Image (cartoon, rainbow, N blue to C red):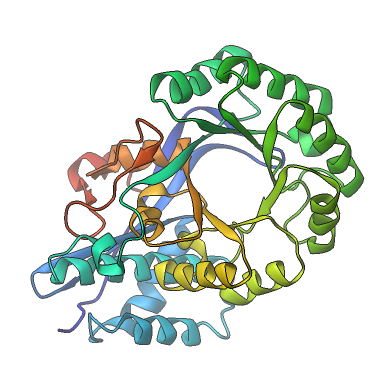
Length: 363
């Protein structure tokens, strides 16, 4: 069964409030969606990134995959990766490959009339999630409402907030916000933080010591994820887990991070690393080195594959992407109780609501 040329659409959705982390601020999020058809079935994939990702997918990748077998995803994936040699894989090209690869897996499951989780093979029926948001632009009441909604409203027993405000120049406010978060969620819920690479090495160690007193168990990107030596230094100095990996665009990236001993848990983003094909390879690599993995953002992309992993710790239930995926798609999952169940329906279970999405379409 042959693939038709994929269709591409791009949507920009304003945030529901100003958002920032330690190193970036934004007021909208752009999602690039691709749909690919074979026979009577259509698969849908997406990534988050600039409109240029959609342009590259439409102009470079779509003609390349047209006419290929809908079932032979590894061959199509390899053809896409080889085709971007001179364009450069990291960044725009990798995100475009990722979106199309995700669509191909969804299509294959729909052609076989199976839930994608069953096609991949499940290790668990339910996948644990953690609430993720807590942006540095939130005041105390907004932060409390969001965290309280997850922990006390939806019974999600683990949450994450952003720290490292202004490239690490507001440490006292960072720690005050962590203390406020702990007060809201109580002593039993797990508390995570994400500095988005804002701190210097020794600064991260000092902050990490203070975080330990507040029961923080997960310190994400305390320094830049490009600083593998720094991540290892911080990891060795702290009791909390040090994590990174969201900017991995191929398996060799994850191999370097693992070899450096840089993380306690490897984060993988299928919307960046090359889709579900490369996501599963990176997870297997982590397992071979005794590491857990956690999915980064785009929860409905990862849900089915996450259910197949024996070394999965949890999935990120990221505020922006949860909101967009719930707005634009039918079939969004419910994290109440701290887990989601991705084993029902056909494919990954989501279907684009094209008419409702039109107001946000930019390409």
